[in-house]
Amino acid sequence: DTIQSSYYLENSISESSVKIEHQFSNRKRFNLLIGTGYIQNNYNYLLKNQEILVSNKTETKHTRISSFAKNTFQLKDRLTISTGVKMDLLMNNSSVYLQPRINFKLKLFTSFHMNGGWGIYNQFIEKALVKDEFGSKTYFWQTVQANSNDVPKSIHQQLSFVYTKSNLEIFVEGYIKQSSNLTSYYTDNSNNFEELNGNSNALGIDFFIKKKFKKHQYLIAYSLGKIDEEM
Image (cartoon, rainbow, N blue to C red; front, side, top):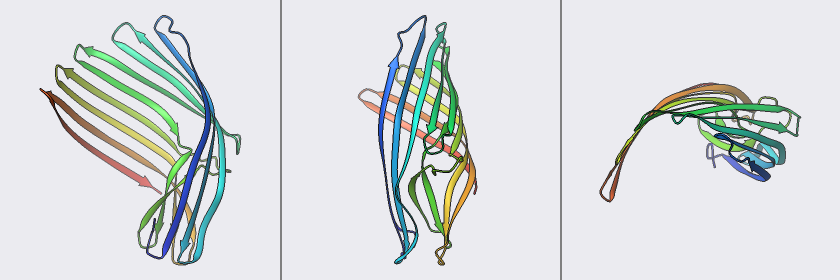
């Protein structure tokens, strides 16, 4: 990858994990799933301006314990609700991150139903932006910093409507995503390397139509969205 012709970037990232899950037997329409795991990420990067080293990290390791519980249950035959929580414990700084989530599916009519969801998501691996003084951009993968309490966080909200009948399916979904603690970097010809932190807000709507005719399938999709960033 390159920023300008004089910049050179090397980057690699890997993950090793051991996970276990247990599904409890269904009881009175309740369906509980739990799990836990040990995850280790290794990453490194090297950024040069010609032959001058700008920034680098070598064989950086981050570990965490990730656990979750999820329960799905039905209220009569029209409403299905899925609730859950995910917990991540960072071994590098002993920080705990709780991420509650809820989703539902409501059957309004025989061929028409509504889906909705809300949740908090922490991102422990992120694709960071590097921008130079000329506006050129490149990206590299990194894990959350060892001494940082500012793990990228996103709050997702979505609502969709689905119509299905015979060989026709119509899907419309709107969403809002609010993200914080995003990381980017700025570098210049003096080889300064500055870390920047900020937030973003994204909202949009997706349309999807699928029609089957004999042995053929026709698809139409359209997305409209807007993202505001503050770095």
